[in-house]
Image (cartoon, rainbow, N blue to C red; front, side, top):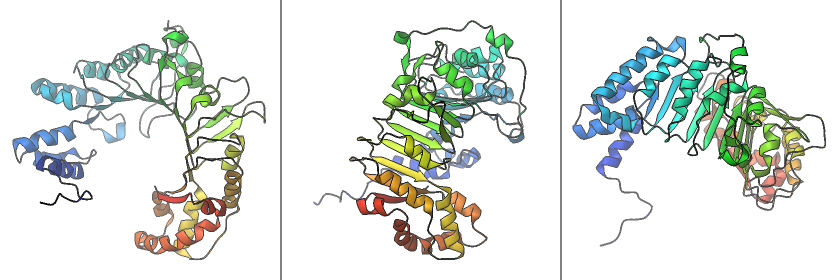
Length: 409
């Protein structure tokens, strides 16, 4: 007998049905899985694993019918009747509401891996303390916080009992979504709260740090004595929608983390110096760099070290790339952009002996919004061969090195 070809994957019944459930399951419309759960007992167990994998207690007033505490209470009743469902819940998204958080804690979820807390009031000390108990779950490896953070003590209370299993922390100190009330009040009570201090020996290693928005209070917390994490150990740093500062002698995120950063991703932001135009972050260990719709990418390239011996992957997303695609869809023709040639020249002037790929990211969602009515997918299929031929003209050095790639994000 001949063995099956290695290029073909043989799926058993369980794997095949699981793929079907993944295709059918829509997190925004979980009712579609109910008919699948009624087919057989085996199908019921598989459908439940998808249905309860991610629990999202709505935080925004416009998309909820019941109050968050009512939804949490119903979930608590379901788990009390069917306790085996607790082990299926891995991702949890809850509002910064003391009663809702207490109800979630009473569910005794022992297998949750990721928690996302969204709040319009980050000054309620009782809610922050209760949320800190949730973050202290020993199974967590990812914690995300979204809300208007105006005082470092908010984060100190949240992460007071954090544990070493946490590898990823995402903090987005921005206003919540449209329709959610924002409470603005004095933070004097929060500033008077006693918070736990950590020595360098007590700090926990952190691999992935993601920040966005106005991070003034967050940077004070990260560089202070009340942060339980060793920020200098961060290997992946993602900066989103903000103005990121660096400078000699400063304690900004870039200066504190740059020595050990292996992956830097900047989305919709800008990097500017504080006090010295000659200062530059020390990204000597950088292996992956991604700049997506950043302000003045030429400046970011200019502050990078001239020699990045470990950089292997460079990804670049530009508004001019999406505009070029849209223009080609409407009126085909070759158009040159000076920005492309300047970026190509700046990257070529750097010493990058390990560079494997220089990838251009084209956001098809942006293209769809900018394209007039019509079958833009068909037009894109027609454009793609021409783009493969013409884009290298804007990045001749990267094309000559054989590292130029195009990715449809």
